[in-house]
Image 1 (cartoon, rainbow, N blue to C red):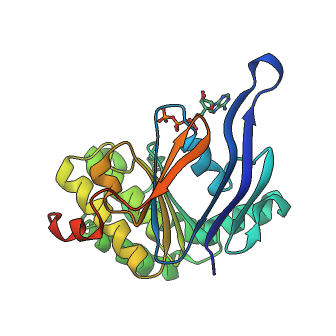
Image 2 (tube, rainbow, N blue to C red):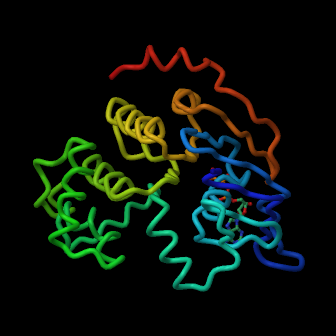
Length: 238
Ligand SMILES: Nc1ncnc2c1ncn2[C@@H]1O[C@H](COP(=O)(O)OP(=O)(O)OP(=O)(O)O)[C@@H](O)[C@H]1O
């Protein structure tokens, strides 16, 4: 089943003379096992697209469906539950809670869904292990480097069985080697059956994607395979 579908989506911010048409008639689908990169100049609508895909913002026209469910038809609580169950976010703003340890930050989405801390913990440890940070599970955010905080945020996005990963420049605070390992992680989740949308300015990051969508002034101007082709992936450092 299609994991994410945008059907003729419009998003106008504001109204009247100051209205900004951030997205115009955008239609995309993302299937399980597919990593789609979104590229385009600053202001072209990339973050708006990601926010709509994650149910953090609503379209002014068209529909957004996650796992076949229209986000527009949901009440606030139902939408929050759907987001926690299906969608993992890796945004530039890490939003780790300073009073929680790494593992507590990671398991927070599960606990918000009613999973007990004792049952949630092994899922949190597994997700931290995937990002190479099991050893610092008990540290607080201010005891970690910026890169470690980023990886904890990624572990939180991966925890549980979420099938849609949304990433906005997830490598921003990371050195290039750690950045590549984060993309590799995203790629392996997708290869295991998740779907992902990655907003990036960098062609070498987009090279991890199966497909690249280019936005300009809120419209999709091109949608193609990455320039280097999938065989390029084999050459990336591990
Ligand atoms: N809350 C808002 N209110 C008014 N205008 C907005 C709002 N959010 C975004 N915009 C406008 O919508 C357009 C698209 O913005 P968006 O942030 O989606 O672009 P972007 O491609 O992600 O840019 P960048 O690469 O700089 O992050 C821009 O003109 C922006 O100024």
